[in-house]
Structure formats: C-alpha cells, structure tokens
Image (cartoon, rainbow, N blue to C red; front, side, top):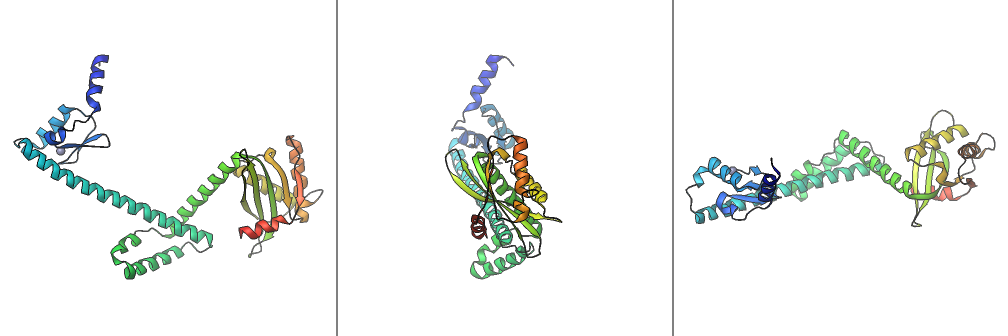
Length: 292
Ligand SMILES: [Zn+2]
C-alpha cells in the first residue's frame, strides 16, 4: 500500500461519526463501532464498512425513513445500555464473592483452622442469608470455599506477603536480625527470625521474616544454614546486616560452633564493609510477645 493511500485510510478510521447511529444503527463503545441490532463489532471506523453491514445484515431497516430509524436507534441503545449494566453488576458480584473467599481463607490461616472448615462456614453463611436476606442468597452460594480453593487462596496470600516483604527488604539500606529458638506444641524446635530495617527515607520497619522448623539436630551449623536459606528466600545479602540479636541459648551464641561464630566466619569470608554486632538481649521476647 502506498504511503499516501495508507495515510488516507488512517484518517478515515479515526473518528466515529455520530450521524452513523441513526443512519446505520451503530454506536461507539470503547473506540469500537458496535451494531445496535446484532451487537457485532466493527473495529475500523469506516462508513463503507458500516453501510455494508447495515444493508447486508439488516435489510429490513433499509426502507425506514431517518425519523423511523432514529426511534429504532434510541430503543436499541436503551436495551444495549440495560444489558451492559447487567454485565457490570455481574462482574461486581464476581469480584465481591472472590474477595469474600480470600477474607475467609485469610481467617482460616490466621487462626490455624483446618481448610475444610471453610465449607462449614459457607453452609452457615447460606443459611443465615436465607433468613436475613433471601433475595441475596445466590450471592452467598457463589462464594467459593471448597478445600482446594482455600489452599489456593492461602498460597496466593502467602506469595503476596513474601513479595511485599522482598520489596520492602530491597529498599533497606541496613537491617538487623533477631533470632529465637523455641519448641512448639508438637515439641518441634522452631527458629524465629525477625528483621528490623531502615530505608533511604529513614523509615524503620520490623517484620517476622521466617519461622523455620528445625528437624533432627539443632546445632549452630543447622541454625546458620536455616538463616542463610531464609536470607536467600528474601534476597537479602549479608552486607546489609549490621547486627544480630539472640536470646543467649548456647547453640546460638557458642564461641566455637555456635551460630554467631558461623556468621562471624561468613562475614570475614565475604569481606563485607563492616563487622556484624552481636547482642544477647531481652527485646526479642518483646518482639515475640507482640507478634503472637
Ligand atoms: Zn448488525
């Protein structure tokens, strides 16, 4: 196609002429010409294309006068508008049922409930809606709370939280870690890692970085590997860490094989700009109390 011809087509295609609504029963929605009669879309705003569609597909309107066509166009436009409102309403309902499903999944995870309890929650919701707002019962029935959905939702929430944490940590100029080892109700040793960091805007934030279950042994080396794994997971490098605080347990603070010794060796090996300070303080107990 020659350059001038191409430019001519481009110019012709740009603007929807309002007169086409009455003349060919077309309307302009989201920069697309939509036939009011059959809702077919014509992407190119070209009078020839609209005319061809009108005369070949809707010949019964060809004999109508412009005045008659105007009435037809107004009625069809009203119907189309109604349909679109229904679609918008439908999509809003879908959004709210998905959100509700996430809210329940979040509660299930937060309160350590079995995933299958969401199905029981749904039964309750549907029966309550039957009594309080029967006209909206179908919305509650559409909230997806099956066990599989809850698993998927919790995985998504967890992935999102990890992403937020990574973004926050990437902004840290410096940070410090606080470590605590304690046993859960099943007598499994858990290493809790908290992080406190500061960014370029001098904003300080503190988060629970990880709860790492320690299987088999709980030596200083095991703790070190757990911390290192956690740092890799959130893309945090040793040179950003300025201090490590522990609760004074021998596996953590041992001079020869403890975690702190391993960290000291690692920092030396990497030749970071600064040394890491070590504290055995009580504030870790405070962190623990605040988070749980
Ligand atoms: Zn049509």
